[in-house]
Image (tube, rainbow, N blue to C red; front, side, top):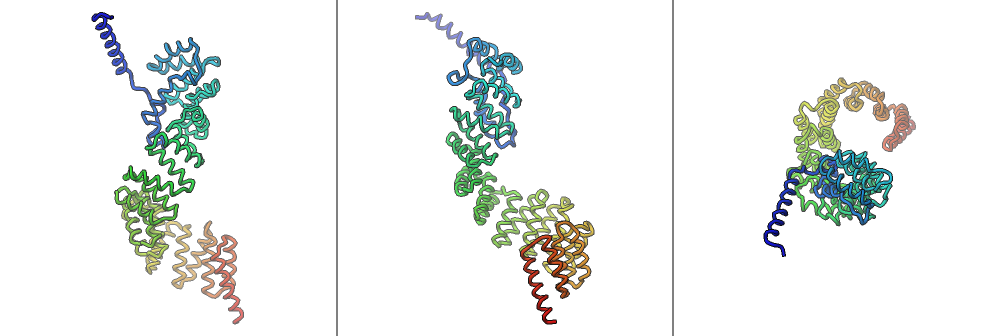
Length: 473
C-alpha cells in the first residue's frame, strides 16, 4: 500500500503534467485546413465542414493493420522527428520527409509528404506524392482517398473518380466520399451513377442539403420528375425561405408540362418577398401562356422595377412577347416602365430594340405616324438595321407609298440574314400591283435562300391566281 505522502506526490505530478499539456494546447496555433474551398465553390459547405477537415487532419495517423508498415527505425524517426515538426514547422517536416521518401522506403513517408503539400494548398505536388505512395502500395486506403480529394479540389473530376471509387472498395466509403463522387459523376454527365452515389451519401448523412440537391438534379437529368418533386417538397418543408428551392421546383414543373403549378411555386416565392427579376419575368411568361394578361403584366412590371438594368434583354423580350400576342396596351405599359426603371442604362442595342418595339406597338395600336417617326429615327442611327427597314417598308406599303416601301425592302435585302424576308416583302408589293409573274420569280428566289412552308403555300396561291388571270385574259 502506498503511503499518503506518496499518493499526494503522484497527484501533484499528474496535475502538473495536465497543466503543462493544457498550456501547450493553448499556445499551439489552430491546425491549418486542407486547401479550403472558396465560399462560392459548389462544394464549399461540404469541403469546409469542420468535421470533414478534422478527418483530413486525422489522415496523418497510421493504420498498421491495413496499410504499409514501417521498420522500427522508420517508426522512431517518424515519432521523434516528423510528428513534432508537423506540430510546429511544416517546412521542417517537409524537409525531413523529402530526405526519407526514397524508392526503398515505406510509402508512409510519401503519403505524409503529400499531406503536407495538400495542407499548404500545393495540390500539384500533393498529387505527385500520393501517386508515388500508391505505386509503392496500391491498396493504401488513405493515399487513394486523399488523392481523390486532391484531384477534386483541382477540378480534375474525371481523374478523381478512380481513386475515390477505389477507396470505397477498400472499405473507406463515408457520406462525404460518396457525396463527392456524386458531384463528380453529375458534372461528367453520368447522371445514373451520380444518383447512386448521392443515395449512398444520404445513407450516411440523411440531412445533408447539398447531397439532396445533387440527387434532385440527377433525377431531373434522368427525367424522373416525380422523384425530384418529392425530394424538393421535403427540402422546402425544412427550408421554406430558400429561394433556389422554389425556383428549382418551378423549373421542374415547367419541364413536366405543368405551367400552372410552376406559377404557384413562383408566386409562393413572390409572397415571401424573395422573387428576383428573372423569376418574376418567368412568372410573367407563365401567366401569359395561360392568357392571363393582367397577371403577366403585373409580374413583368415588378420584375422590371426590381432590376431593369441587369435584366434589360429579358424585360424587352417580355414586351416583345406581349406585342406578338396583340396585347398592344400591355406591351406599351411595360415599355414605359422599362424606360423609367432603366433610365440612363437604356443605351446602344437595347435602346434601339426598345425603339423598334415602341414602333411596333404604335403601329399595332393604329398610330402609324408615331410608328414611322420612330422607325426613321432608328434607320438614321443604324442604316443597316434590317428589322427597322422591313417595318418601315410595311408602313409605306400599307399607306400607298410603294416606291418608299420598295426602297426599304431592297436595302434590307442586302443585309446578311434578311435576304429571304426582303424578297417575300417585295413579292407582296408586286402582287398588290397584280404583277404576278415578277412576284413568283422573287418568291422562288426566296425559297432557294430560305425554304419555308408558309412561303411555299403563298407561292402556290400566287401561281394559281396568275393562272386564273391568264385564262381570263
